Amino acid sequence: SWRVIAQKNLTGATRSRESLLLASGFLLGFGGFAALIVYAGEPDFEGYLNLLAPGITLLVPLAGIIIGYDTVVTERESGAAVLTLSMPHSRKALVLGNLASRTAQFSGLVVIPTVLTGLGLAVTYPGFAVVRYFAFVGVTVGYGLVFVWVAAALSMALSTARRVIAAAFGAYVGVVLSWDTLIALVEGLLFRFRPTGPEPVEWASFATFIGPQTAVEYLFGEVIGAGVVPSVAREMTAWYISPVIATLTLVLWASVPVSIGY
Image (cartoon, rainbow, N blue to C red; front, side, top):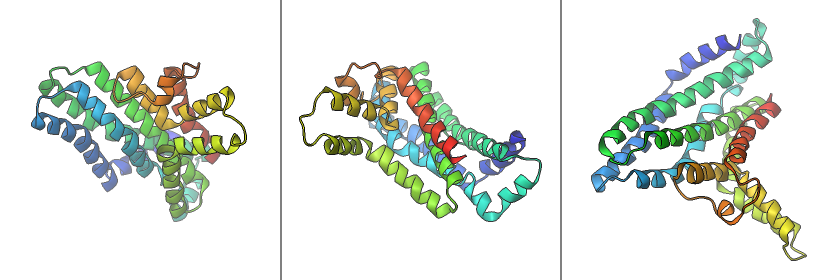
């Protein structure tokens, strides 16, 4: 029955104003930026990806939060969730259906504009590499879905939309904008009375690397060659500095909050 819920929600979501605005934003971000480089001078595919990557790490989480924050809470506030659960739908089906629809919605909002942009890049950028470009798009989608699912988890756990919005943007500030600073602060508090040795440095480096922004920057820089590899990955050779751990980090950041919210 989760498919029924997903289909119903996706049909309404594709017609919403926020979907149109976000799709336009992604088209403007990918396509407009590419057109601006062409207008400014000689198009360079390497430079295009290097300049685009930092903006992706900062702005895509906001788009994910916008898509995911009202996954359940608006249905709870309006009474629609009670009506849905009074039919032959379980709570699990309600959650899975909503997650599936939001996942498909966000993926479409990113993939369709970037495919259109890719057609333009193939014509105007001499060094265009289709595999690298769509690998970049794939990592972008996965990174955004982390925040779709985090916002959805908050939507399951909290009782009002205002609380969900406040918590979601608080999570954005803590996880995206301030993660490295928070780790450094905790490290300083824990080890302020003795010299910093290998153990706290190793611990802090691991905690820094498993932040979602650092993990996606590593995938962009190390695997795709876009943007700058994070300093923690350049300075360390530990076992956890790898594409597998970075990918697993994103999966856990998405799935663990949803399990708790459920």
